[in-house]
Length: 110
Length: 118
Image 1 (cartoon, each protein chain N blue to C red):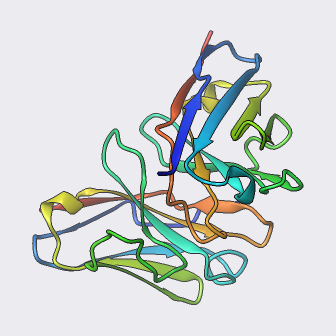
Image 2 (cartoon, one colour; image 1 turned 120 degrees about the vertical axis):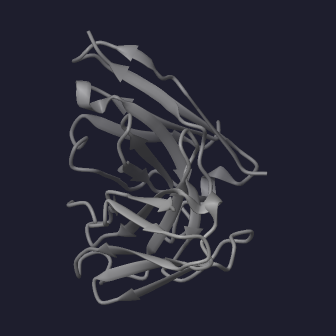
């Protein structure tokens, strides 16, 4: 169960768009449409932002979108806002009936 | 509304055991698989394990396999994490979450801190 690969940090200016990648293998990200994304502010509980690759839970801004190509999933945040500054984690179901998280990406809004 | 409340955390010596609980309310507990996820101080999220809605199947992360076990009591709407042979690297906040047909974790508890230290 190797962790999914995410960039350690990403940054962007207010109003810009950023994309966070999440790379796995054909046994996890590439094999199932069970990729999810979480936002976590310091000291807070993780919040589900995207589920099943592309879906947003009720209440999540449409500035957040998800996609997948091959073994890499992506989270795109458009119209960056200061409140988007947080840690972001991807997760995927695996062929071993287990789950795996990415190492996390720290988003800085400049 | 869905509520998950973890308890049982604390300070424990290396090699000892501890049992965490997660009390669920606001939904039909026996219809959902449940997960444990942990986060070491200043580190990322790590999946610990899952138990099927009826307890028939359980799967664990490599770092806890053979030491941790998950159980549930559907009559009490409670999930458990039994942790044995604890190590310093098991120090973390432990969260319980509800399985949403494998698609993601929408509901999380507030977490309970386990500190393994002599």
